Length: 193
Image 1: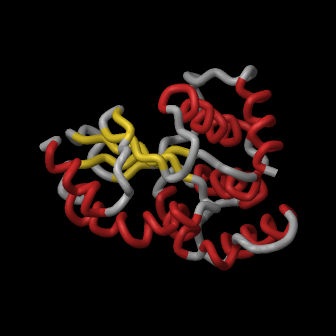
Image 2: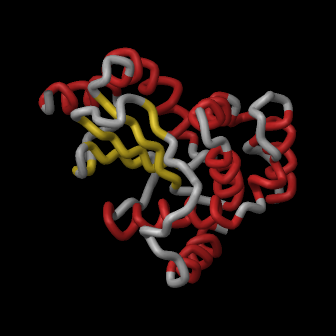
């Protein structure tokens, strides 16, 4: 399935412009003019990404994001169709899209299950509708601008940053190559202050 999705992304990349202007907003947390920018290339079905949100993100937020030192930008790098649809749902919320991201990672075991993409999509729809995010699920899934935005993130990840796995962390345009633990991340960030 991953090979099929990769082929789809490659075929679509020829018709997309990486700098296309559209109404879709980048999901980020922190000060827009923070000294340090972290790009987090993630897939919403990735268990390592969910682990990042559970075990690393809380301290990163408390010690760096909330203090205006770090801007954390979420970049879409879906590894399968379920992650692609989940990314479209998260990007659909123009304000506070990170709420949906954190919710989907926290509840990943509830919706990332099933034997077919149809089951996964049904689980995703049920869990999104169980909350009051103020979005229309079907409109989000079928929005061409959002779809292009998500695909453009993935294409940029491969072309510009050589992303091949998730999560991949880019700090001030440099790929973070150490094991992704809070301690390693903290040491790297402190050196940049």
